[in-house]
Length: 231
Image 1 (tube, rainbow, N blue to C red):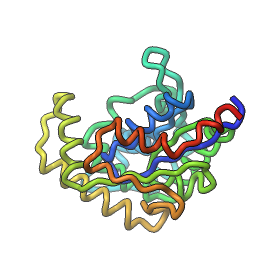
Image 2 (tube, rainbow, N blue to C red):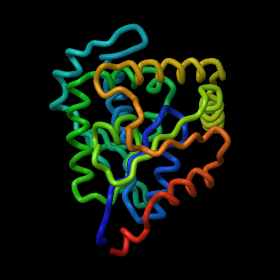
Image 3 (cartoon, rainbow, N blue to C red):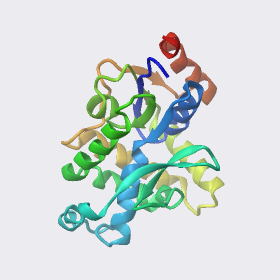
């Protein structure tokens, strides 16, 4: 396809970034890349290796183990999505647990791990034609992306969205647990010294508080010049 470009969608957790990014990618005929899934896969790996838990985090052991960790995206022909794989195996369901959610922001603070993930992300975007969501995609990973968006919503609404999502998956969890997780992750993501969560100066801000998915999608597509697809 001629004139392909990169679309970045950043924002705090549970603002609908992944769902919207998937929809935009489908409309554009692009590949969707969930950068957050990469860090979740790292977190799942660290949990399995007992490098991290609620009570400890052995950064040195995890950093030393980087050469044994291979993360990439592979096409799932059943749902037609590109899913994150950890050492050749898909852990798509397991990386979405609250245990992983509670620890992923700590993993994301490790400079050595972020450098490794950014290298992978650069490789995935070398030919453009991608929609990637995360927390630093428009600021650090692809600062020159043609289209950048930043989604936000209140902590309460984001916690409600996440809680409803987990309940549908038959997870036994309280709203307060989810709310505390949202607030904690925001604090860690915004205040980390390396690649903190901030809106890129040239990103378009979209408040999703009173918008449904169709409305958010329409707003984003309004900003994207479809003529680029046919130039």
